[in-house]
Image 1 (tube, helix red, strand yellow):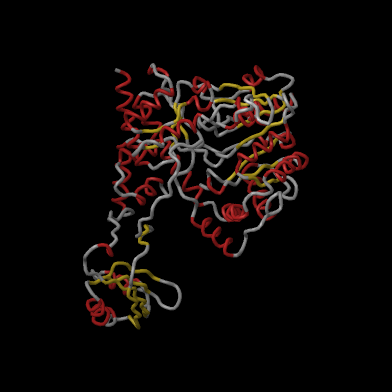
Image 2: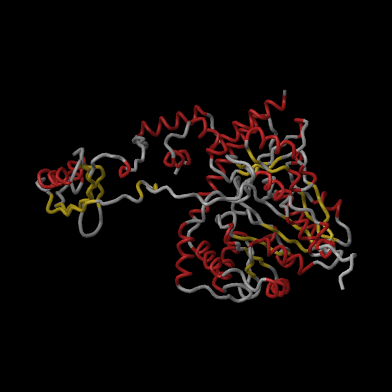
Length: 395
Length: 159
């Protein structure tokens, strides 16, 4: 019989879920979506539509009846194509039979990796500012997130010394994301070698989320997995959302040694079964044809990046030149206003949306993230408005 | 291809100031390079891409396949160049396959195009035969779709 002391719905929620805050982005989205005629620099996805040949092939595959489950691991043909691509682009060779797992976006792949690796209380070392999910995903996997803060005065580099300062004997996993969302930073060759050496010496496993790898503007991307002795201790994550403009297809993959792939596959088979078949077909088409569209989109992002960085310079917002992804992370701390207030006021007064740096970790205070995955026209108008706004703040 | 040309091909109205920012160049350098391309004849003009179907103007366009007898020494060039000079002729291409030249010809109406074909084109020395196809509707022109499609709505803020 129910008593007056019966639980409220809220009381049923698991404690570790209650403890996770809502994403700062979601929070901001709710505010922006109430307004009209906003120019948004807050969108973390390409403004380009998926290349037509990929869409056309997806429709064709549906017509042909590719609407059934695939194997848990994903279509073998897709894994073969990915294997060839990863070997060529990232310099690591994976067996399509047992070292590649197709997932629902990198989001699922990351969740699988953490759930497969982390025992309650294991520490996962990661760097902030970073993508909004990392910390929450570690907590959902019952791990302990350990934050390393990257800084503007160091161009948001991640160095061995910074990791050493935070690592403990309980640190099991190092989670990397370069090119980085939201800073646009990449790992320098010398830092990469040092970080790899650190992971080997401390016997850590590395999860590397390289979703923005193709969007690197001033040189070739180097993956940590290509360094000697790293492939056997790395889970490499990649997907089609960014460089191929396929966010809505929700398709990613994890490459890892067979034992780790098998462990992730177990979680995947019981929770997801398989990634959507039509998306897997689309991915085969995207990867097996010449990468013209990716090159064109990358060139366009580079031009916008150049435009944006120059504009911030003129407006008087110090901004580390982003080397990859499609985000700029200008500093606004000297204007005597918090990131959140800056973003809210900018939205209110000039109808330009950007994301407060604090959505990406506490050390994002003093910054806002401006995505240049929007047309140059929008960027030009947004910069005009932002210049006016900053002028007023300075007075 | 020079990225400057890629930008202008996409939008010939892009200002030198904007291009300079995108390419990390000075405005003067951008202007100088454009002037140089114009001087060399690599940039041969700037035109608006119109959807003529939306305009209330009489226009009739035909695609014409032309078979030609090549001349000793001149090859196809002399006759092609002769044909090119008619103002009705918008484009001329030398083709592989069943015919030699492909023409895009525009006139006010069918009669005007027909007159051009029978009186001017077919009677030229070297022209062996012609096959004329009239265009009914333009879906895409110079890489641009003639139909405006609603853009897919993206979320205003996303991670």
